[in-house]
Image 1 (cartoon, helix red, strand yellow):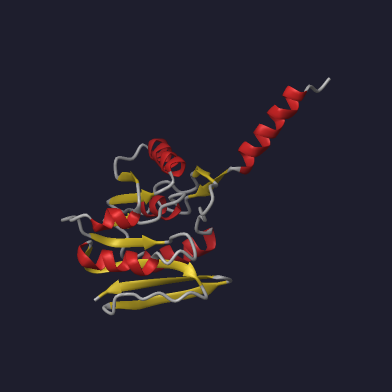
Image 2: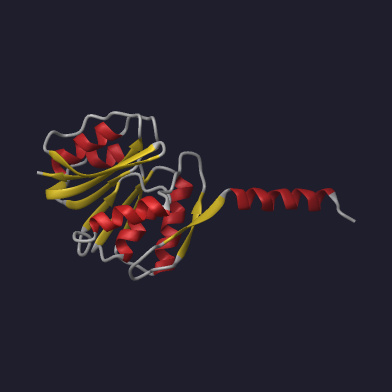
Length: 200
């Protein structure tokens, strides 16, 4: 006999399944590893197809890079960069539960080369720094006008000379980027535009 308690338990399990998923590391040291992710509002992990294209673009530059993922979400780009030879990856994520999952995945990979910061990316970038990044991922929640502000703050003090900056945004959107950023690569997939810039 199925009780009300059994039905409630079943619903909880369904909700748990619906609110979680995983990302797959495509290549490198952790190739094939699947990492659990929290499917929270606004989290939109980069698809494998887009990720594969991006890391083909980055192949000559990724080894030994100091990487920053400004809106890490599921950490798909940061963990892929680490797997492919980045020296250090800093992940910034505002959502507390998502940041907690990033820390759990860091433990799963047993990596000391990942730093997880649970906080606001714009506040993080307003702080003074001597740390220079040569590879930055900017993939914020759509339609919140975060890209221009993020790029301006990065340009102030966070970027190494000739740093590479990946920007993923809604295809119909327009953002004001620093004039010294040179567009190297660009693709549009459905409603998503993704571009790779180099600081000059």
